[in-house]
Image 1 (tube, rainbow, N blue to C red):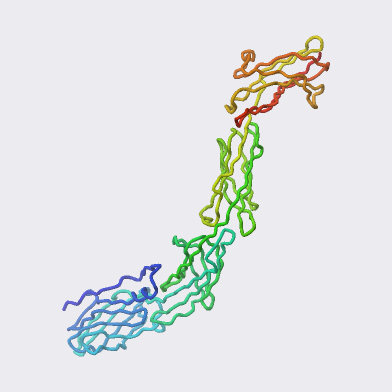
Image 2: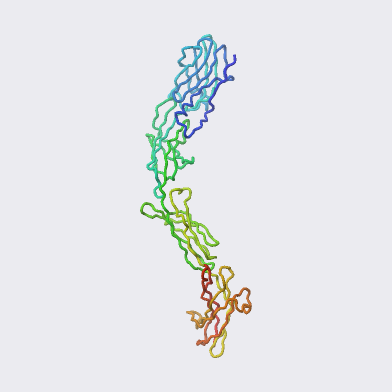
Length: 464
């Protein structure tokens, strides 16, 4: 006689769907299994049609058929991990028709501990015919851990984003046992993106937990973690919305005017408003951009940032900051950048300077001056060179006279490549012995962010 093919429900790998209610998950654990043809050996006309164990109710059912009344049914519940018989059930309530129907029994969690099992079924009728079905499918005889979750507030800000999360975990043993508090359970707090935002627990003796966690805006739920032979449920969602704290930035440059290559500092503070107070915003990235250079600085505990560069070109600088992913929605940054201006002066060089004695206590001077070729300034150094003297090797310099510069004049007299201006003159002096030098006082070019830095020639000693 050919026996019907069994219908199984798969292995013990249960998919835990986040929004699948525990009731549905447990109901799905009822197995209706037909005996596989290869596993069932029949003698006469006894047929084992199916068998199953309901996790919710503990109902163990066997459907069988025979030509005479079935007198015995036995089910071995075998551990999948050890292949040993965990429980044998023989006390079944038969159907009215003892030859065709479903025999039932009840299994409790006290008789069968949680675990993964399979069923071996044997049946015999009064004519002495019998049949067996071995390893007919899998039974996940698991309990269910069900969490709850509440939040102390549904509104957070950057300055006040700590939320107390509370709840409880109850455990229902397989077979329809009433839920009981579940102590010692750890829970994962998940964000609406599915990532673990925090770990909570363990639960107390009464199954409850309460813990303060820093949160960002979004939805959250908890699930028990680290449990074996247990279906885990998910709590209902909580939602945290944000009331952003405004951010204020100050920034300035020091110095405003600088020579080429000189260090320039852009510094300032970041603060956020918490209630009526403005507090430092520490650890925040600030981006600073200057002509030809730029970079980032990080605010310290006082909310202060400092960015140091070498001045290479004048123009506008900017400083701005924005929230990173952890602060998203908690801070409102200024919509406009902080800006300022920087002036950079080209260095001026005296290629050479000479001073010589002339009759009647006069001294003649001559020299060649040029700006370094940085390409910053528009034009040439001007409008004058001061001739200065002092009678000692150190001390203050005194002005002897002034020579007007004429950009581009007598360039060839310098005999130096890229020299801009040649100057010369003769001055009366009262000092019989003195040191002389040429000094260029510097100049800023109107309408630009560039100019020429002050500079001095070497000193020349002259006796008249």
